[in-house]
Image 1 (cartoon, rainbow, N blue to C red):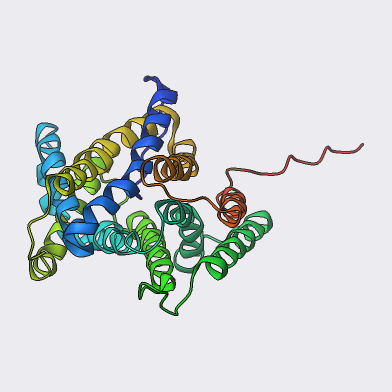
Image 2: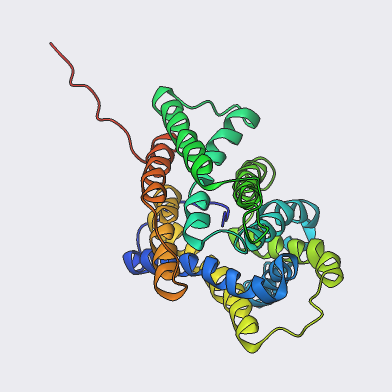
Length: 308
């Protein structure tokens, strides 16, 4: 996920509860996407997810009197929808057919890392020395994790996990590009407009490919429940929670919720899907989170005391 940022405001809600709840919901998105993609396939899963999210958010937009802004900025919102939802959701739906939810969620934690890199290259937002160190550490963790988990040689089941890992990294790169695009072209537009417009745009972009690849066998009720949950709960409700969190504690602190998402995603995978958890994933995940924290300025070294 990569919603646009808002403005700081004094805390008016029980933000700690919202923070944990949002991490738990976004962590569950990997579980639900996997269950849905097993029967729907990658592209139909992504298409249904954004269509349900759009249907959930559009009435909220209408009630707040913001529908006209959706029409005014529809071209740019379409671009954001493709970059921020259509491509990433399709990539993760594909990846989750071949790698664990835990590994996918750890790779997803590199979103702020790619965001900082794209902002540097595109917006000339050059990071300082410590942030550059963070980028180096974070991408080293990604490389180490990919080298241990990704193989482009098909295994006994005919699956090459390397393509799944690359799909996750493509998704996080798209999130980073979308963040800079939003900052460049959609600054000042209410976050709910950007969120709703992106889901509508993604629905338009994925509609025809999803219909072309629609499964010939009718998906089960479990698959429909899973894709409905990821659309309403993990996209629609999650956006509302995230916007409220931004209003309560500011965008920088709200962004740290992405660091908690892998904890929940790994827990769901182990408890509900019987997935294993390797030491390599834990170590590389810690390296990635450290690098991300440094590169985004969420962790910094204390200033040196001044001498007389």
